[in-house]
Image (cartoon, rainbow over all chains, first blue to last red; front, side, top):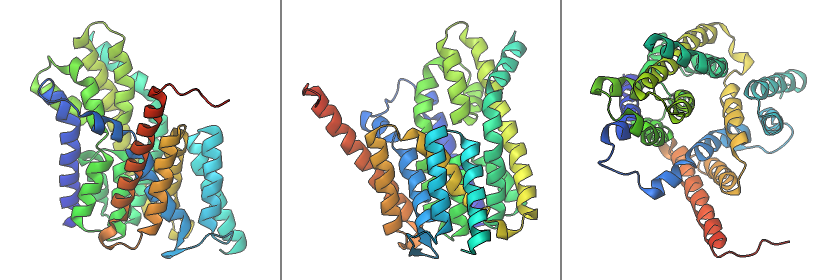
Amino acid sequence: MKTWLVMICGGLLTYATRLSFILLLGKIEIPAWLQRSLRFVPPAVLSAIIFPELLLHTGKLDISFHNARLVAGLLAILVAWRTRNTLLTILVGMVALLVLQGIFKL
Amino acid sequence: MQTKEFWAGVKAELPLLIGVFPFGLIYGVLAMGAGLSTTQAQAMSSIVFAGSSQFIATQLIGAGAPASILILTIAIVNLRHALYSASLAPYLKKLSPAWKGILAYLLTDEAYAISITHYERGGDIRLKNWFFLGAGLGLWTTWQISTAVGIFLGAVVPPGWSLDFTLALTFIALVVPRLADSPSLAAALSAGVTAVAAFNLPYKLGILVAAFVGIVVGLGLETRKSISGQKGAPAPK
């Protein structure tokens, strides 16, 4: 039930955002500060997901080579930075995690 | 002519679809891992129809976040579509409400990227709407099919494969190439550190707090850069 509520409300808000200026053209302007902030939404939100996934192990900070997700994630960051290749980034990160988990039982 | 324009839109979208398919697939896998039913997982791909926010929603649902936080997070992640809407609005001005309604529904990152360049090339705008429709529907169809394949995979892949890690990896692949300028990089780092520090906040509020901090830091740094740029200070040698 909750999931349906979230989907429908989230979907309606998303649709309203997409429709907004197409429908209201000429009646409202997008404020300059909002236009400038939107550029930072993707890096901020995505990093807010990535960091805890890599740095926290069962809710506790774990910065060490025993943290397989951190090592695999750093490798993926390197690949993403050098190649800008999405699929390669995901593949390298996933293989690295599975190898680390398999070999070291991390 | 209209049919030709429609298929031209589908064709222009094709290279992007190859990249979209794995995302839909991963979304399907993650949704199953978060405990959504197959109907819910598939329905989200047509009701919300926005990749990153669907990924984040599955994570928050899996973590048991309350509905209000989930809805707010989805809305904020998708705010960028207002920019696309504003950018396309002049070209869609003369269309009927039905056309506007349908094209707005199909307005994703990928459909926008392909269509705006086509509109900007000039020519008969009425025909170009068919191009947008083709690009949008091509993406929509791919997203639904890849979601379905992911749902199937998510049900058969054993949990020991740590497929949930594809979420972090997908986001790394999306965010790292965008960090070319220092305000973006600062926004990403400050948001990431805040998210770790705020991880134990109630209601999974951490992501929203972190996003807010990141956006403010990015904006602040950009403002400072543009002010010092306006003063015409000589660049350090």
